Image (cartoon, rainbow, N blue to C red):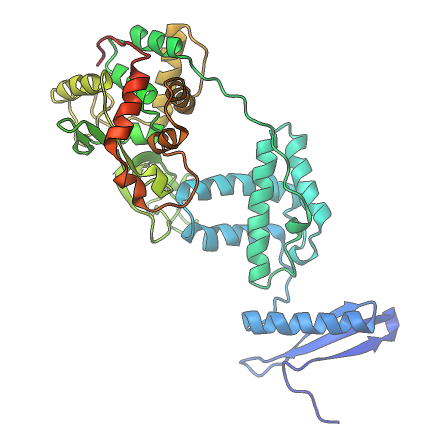
Length: 407
């Protein structure tokens, strides 16, 4: 019988443990043959194992003979695959999920032996900690993405997460400020240097990053509109030293770096603060400035001329540095408390704007364009939207809130 060549493989019965074996001899650059064996209970199972070995050899040019754990894979997936495909804020979110939930729950499991029960075990780990259904759903999503990538690269025979339904999520309860609440807030902080910041949040529905990152050269007072094509975000630096600097935080690493997709547009502001483009084209929009907000923003512009402002921002700290998102949040909650209105997230001000627009009889299509709320992948069609239509919508809404002067 002719001798089998490397990569051809074969099957045989092993009497000692009553198992069928699939064996494959791998080619080796140094001339030393390396034999890989997989076992099964039946001859048919062994044939399937042999085919699996050959597919892995073709896909990778080699076969992983050491045990690959879930922990090893998800970290490799994060650092070498995800970091170059999605935005840094998303990577940071995934990393939190991986380190706090996936690895503690099933990190020691062998990737190739992972089962649907292990996926459920991971979800249960999250819910047993008393965390929300949204946290459980996010954990499932991240694990599923990691396993999908492992399957695509031949590290796993399948994505076992597909065998498990995504956890159902409880509908979030939002605190929506009423028009009366909004007026109380603005009247309470009328003398504050950031009063116009809160007026802009309530009367445009713009996101936090869009407003704290708004530069004066994107505000057109003559034609009365604002360009919301950039947002300011805090993004964590990564270690660039390979773990040799002994610093705990990436921001303190002498070789710190930021890994991002090649098509992600971003500009560095200060420290960990960066300007970045919105996630989708729906978020990249131009909206009108109508009264009373137009006058409020104009007064803010006049005041800013007398302040230090090296970054050209509409709203800054007194020393001219950009507003940090955490400090901006704290100032918002302080304003609500001072006004005696229900506490609400700053992001919920967008829902207040949507409610006010709805009360003013503005069509849902126009509300979507004002808020940049669409989840569809769109081109920059909204740049061609009739500004007169949006101006009319915002004017109707602003008529519900007769505001006084504010800076």
